[in-house]
Image 1 (cartoon, rainbow, N blue to C red):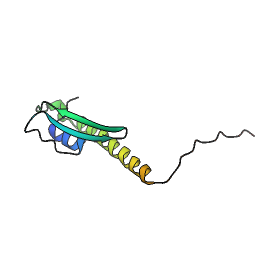
Image 2: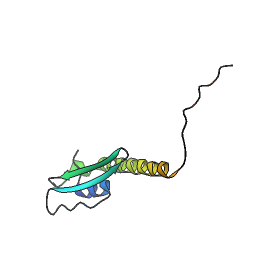
Image 3: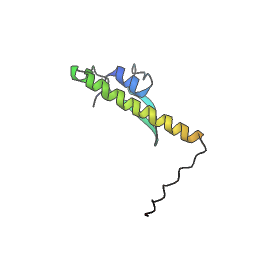
Image 4: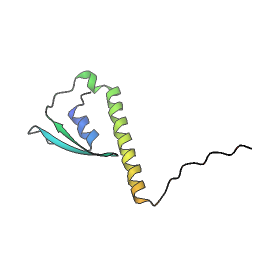
Length: 90
């Protein structure tokens, strides 16, 4: 799925300098770090600017922010999560 430049900046949380291509942007993920290479910037079509597309981008961004927030809390907290014990039948 192609995303408009404005949406890419919002989704990545950064302003990629696309004046000189290729441009590179780093994105931290829960499982590591990803470096994205932007090799081409095109104007978004009408279907890519739809409210549904904006909702998808917002959903992905919100999910990524939530995962990063939870990961940061887990890294700072001294909490150990133990597996639940099976219930005993009476």
